[in-house]
Image (cartoon, rainbow, N blue to C red; front, side):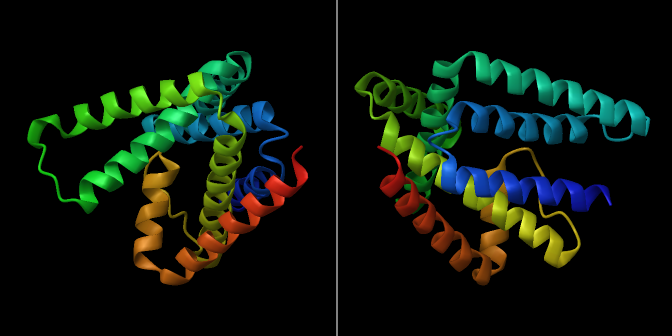
Length: 193
């Protein structure tokens, strides 16, 4: 029953992000941070008393959600940085660059620079529409996959790492994900003034 509730929350959160992510960004960011914080804490507290695990996860989720709501620009920077990190990681893999021990540092430094630049340039609207569409589609696909497979396909607190693993094993989810992102971007661009 708990998994069904959590999967339903993911799908609803995904729909909000997909269709109203830009307009409700501060709330969406707080909800997303709550879910990620809750799941991260739930994994860390695994093996503890179930009440402690659930209570601790709720506390961490709420604290992170409230913090991201209160510090909007920090949330914006983190979104920009996260998107940049995924693009940099994909570029390094695509071009097969062997950075050795500097791999993680290259991703971190590059994503911080790109994230800060995006924040300074004020290209928030399109980046937020893209980010909320990508995130919303990710939540929907992960929630739907969990319901369909009757097991939660998430192994860490990073939605995009888990999504990449899922999309790599089932091409149908990849097609649905791409379609959802396109629908979300088009819908938000047309409805946001």
